[in-house]
Length: 254
Image 1 (cartoon, helix red, strand yellow):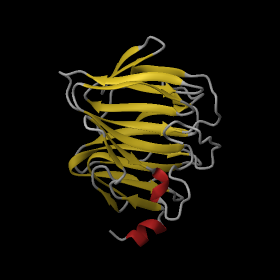
Image 2 (image 1 turned 90 degrees about the vertical axis):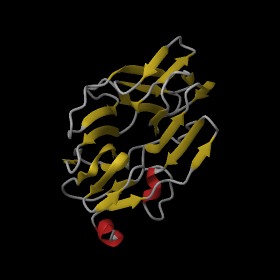
Image 3 (image 1 turned 45 degrees about the vertical axis):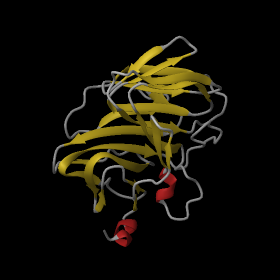
Image 4 (image 1 turned 45 degrees about the horizontal axis):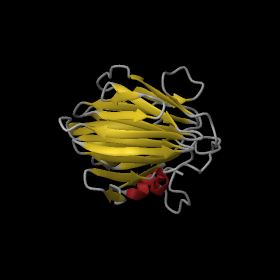
């Protein structure tokens, strides 16, 4: 791949992250959108702090713990993540449901997979809020049914007409592309795009990505098109306002 030509078009690809934590039955790989940019002084990119690929084996319990001052979205394309918290919620997040934890001034929760659950692989997305000490809360419910080769809006900024929201300027979309199919990134004025290939392979206007690789688009003009490789692809895209005010006090994302 000609990285010079892609950079000229505002495309900044990154290989699979090597920031990996192995805790036995629970494993995490940390993707930092800001590191796609050379000499960028922040691991995050504006309000999008971190995109964590998380693995949980069947029969895994992550005991009750607290998060503060970050918005945490659990996107589960397969398997089931079981959540309970000190507010009395017992929730199951799977391919048909989304969980948004608006940690605010503090929210305690636990995560679990049962012994007869399938192995879990998910993304946990950390968004920096605009202010610290916000009211904590949780959002959980069904996602719209996905349409092949069309972007689905997963969450939006607070105040938008959407079921799931985070308290800063990040919109998230996902798409399941058939082999060779393409979908042009949604456009929002003033936003850049961070594109992560969860499964399969894809090209973003000349930047070829394998599964778990990413590209940050900071260009002007028409949004790039994401095109799947020979086996299709599942892709997640974040439209981010890099100039949005942020706080960096989150428990994990910062």
